[in-house]
Image 1 (spheres, rainbow, N blue to C red):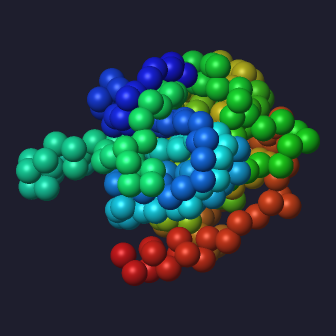
Image 2: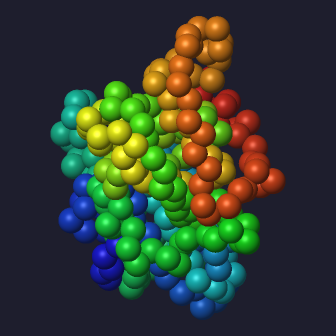
Length: 271
């Protein structure tokens, strides 16, 4: 991704980016309390590479006690809407990233290094290797895991990528952004890849799948000819006959690093 500097953290839009991910980085040289006014839509705070806090978009003025170290605030956009009077009253209500000041011991925290990852194609991932995790490394939630696999597809028909077992992220098919996935929030589990993505009329064409994950990587994805827009509760008998291809990712398995999503489930039920 591209890099820039902000005196105070600017939103994605103010950094000339409309979607994807922005990473705000800062060296913390003394212990203190940091307060983040507002982020959209979801932020992961990492201190020396370890997740210390997750902030949801509905939260405001969130405080946390920090010790000296390298601070990274990874902020995800969950997309925009184009209706509602709230956006007309204040354009910053529509912006993504950090949208209100960050304080440290009640003073403005200034001079940030910013990495921009628009996630419009896999080309923006170049230079993001500091966030990659190899086969022998444990995944740290909030980091950016990039799983990659090249395989063949012998069908020219439409294909669906099943994201069951994954946490939250963005999927790429043939270097093209298929869309965001968040299986727990659902109900959509599959992302649609049109037949031409698989090579059109060409049999046994080569395809490449990338999974850009932020919370819980799996070690495989499933390519199927059946969509699932009804969530995890769908019964196998309701899905009908389907052609399924299991694609194991090259970057290793993280099956032993499961996380609890009970808090997320409660939020979904409440909302």
